[in-house]
Amino acid sequence: MNLENVSNNELTNRIDILRSKEREVVLKFLIHLGEFDKRKVYLSLGYSSFFDYCTRKLGYAESAAYR
Image (cartoon, rainbow, N blue to C red; front, side, top):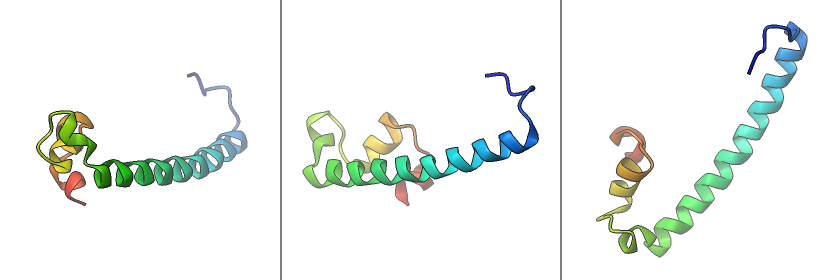
């Protein structure tokens, strides 16, 4: 994506829009993760724990998966 020709004002507006969308996506992601954990789906996929799934499958650092 080439943003060199985008004005500073437009760039600022785009960041604001993307940030609001990011919050919405993160919230939906966390709700889905919560249901995934509640159902213990990770066990049927061969992971020993939700933590194991988050670190090995999703690629989160251990500290981030713990939180």
